[in-house]
Length: 341
Image 1 (spheres, rainbow, N blue to C red):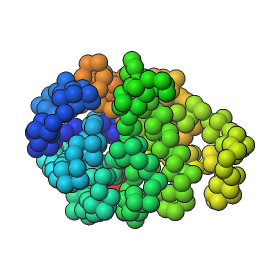
Image 2: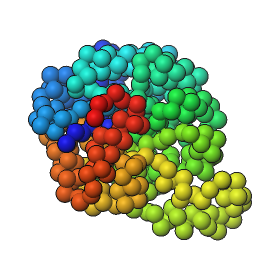
Image 3: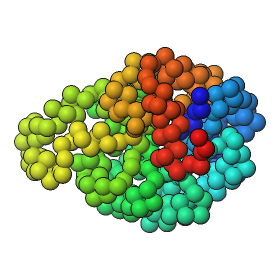
Image 4: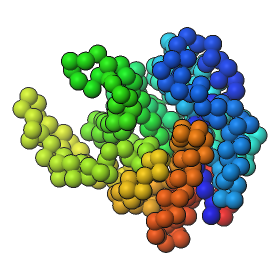
């Protein structure tokens, strides 16, 4: 069975070398990246991938954390984005048997430049989509200044792929100054993705660009499990709010809130959880779920989540046609990949 790993991460050499020169990259999430060789060492990445050659396995690559807009002012982010996208495109061109495609990264702290870089990535580099984080240095994605980026993706028929972004500086309780025990990651990241999805829906972005395709990393985050809240719960939007008329938001939307959330795409990167996979597949269906592992962030620093995700998917009974869609056909269609068969 063929597998296209639709959402995993790698830093091209030129970008990685440049990032190491930046202040602060050795702390926090940057420390995490430096401790995982398969995210920047191509030989190590190939060694990991060789373990799955019998699966006809390839990857769609995107940058790891942190978001480029967190690494410096706009002039730094612009340069990093070009370096990143040129490097990812080159890897795909040099190693098509390894890398089926890539997701472009953007300098979202300069929205005009971000839209221009998205256009360049689609037109000149054949990017399969855009990786955008769940907030831009704390700002929500439905702000007017970010709309040209979504317009570019919709016009080119390629997806925006949401990656969560949240740090320990966002506390779990009002009385504290920081998040403890990495709660900001375990529970904070799924919340971040879900909140970004909601802002795209209720902020009118999905209505404004009806052809826009959005993929929510980690199987749609909290949405499938909270279907009852997203469905019947949000059908009563405004019932719990007294200081503004949120019922007017419902009237403005063209569809029921749940219908928008059903239209998102999602990937299978839930770290080998069978229960989460079954839940996500039940919510989204086989046409909107893509196989992905989030390689290389497992405890083994490379092969673990690939192996566990394949194992989980193979344990779930489904028609061969649906299995092919999830394992590779959906990725080929959504990203516009040249894949025979």
